[in-house]
Length: 108
Image 1 (cartoon, helix red, strand yellow):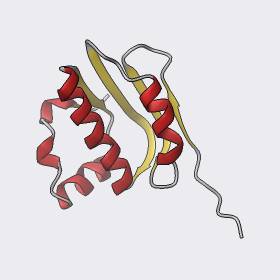
Image 2: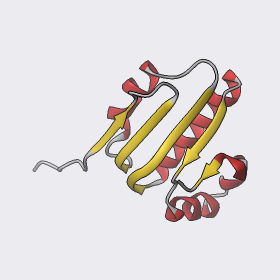
Image 3: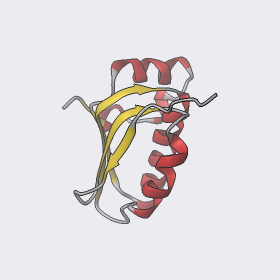
């Protein structure tokens, strides 16, 4: 039996901006990490654009936490754009929303 993975993609064509598309879930994380690491910014700003994300589970939240940690280590201006309200709720339920400065979130 084969399990079909939900589609997920990452667009890094604009410097300092990661556009996430599809389901940021346990099923797509392993495919994400190599590309993610290859394009990590080392200065300036870093925007993670989630406007085209259709679902985020706890594995996806862990990616955002790792991104936040990296951004702090590199002294990057970090923004998460278009994070679905369901993801914020999931972060709050698991007690990790407070790790993020609310100014990091932009709705559009």
